[in-house]
Length: 330
Image 1: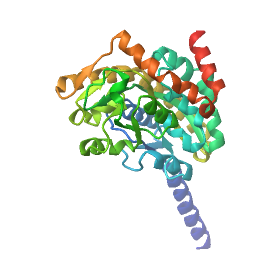
Image 2: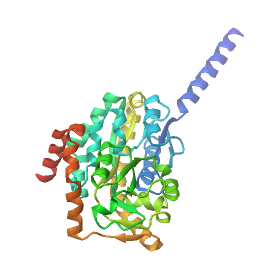
Image 3: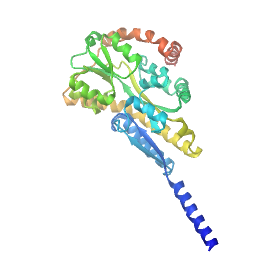
Image 4: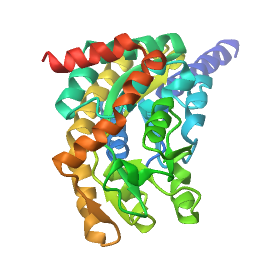
């Protein structure tokens, strides 16, 4: 009987261990935009690739549209381990003490997508991601959204047309300085609150890539949009360092491969998604779209030229110079 009891106990213990080993590793991936944006689609693609690459050992739960946390709350939740993965916009890394990420907010720094990718896919971008380890998180990838347009309820044909407008921005000293250089009043606000604030007249206008503008239905509350392409909006996919380094090595390698594939997908669809969104905004008939002439575009550049100089101490003059050199010496 004793032998039988011992054998029975061993069987139960082994069964329990086997069951525990079969329990999937859960990655909660929180973000603040809609599922049908470039970031939303990339998060879903990562979910699919990660679960396939790990043969079900990992289960990725994606929470879009601020279902779990809003903007700044995400960073704190990640550091506390309440979520494992987020993809905040690059403007939001200031609270982590990583002010250098605000370099991506500088107006007219990147002339096009190719120049941008020479930074995000090169040694400068990799070095920025690596330095996040000191903040308790690990940077895995840069994901594109696109270049931004100004919008308001009056035509924005020249920089002076923003004078006096209350313009919603992400919490970034660079974006604050940008709006002030245009004579506007910057108002930092959570992304999920923008539609209601525009509808209520709390703010007058905003800046967004077209995919964010359209998926948030801002065409219903903004009558004019200027395709200024004055600044870039992108994301960094980051994970809790303790969680990531605690994963089995083979699982981590599989997830890294899945992230590389998801990143290639994200950055391949971003421009197309924004082009389609701009056409959808135009087709809605609710928002009048203005494409600046070369002369008008130069006026915007001239009006915002002081921002880069003003932000050198905040971001780092050397980083700005290195990025310009990397772009121009290609």
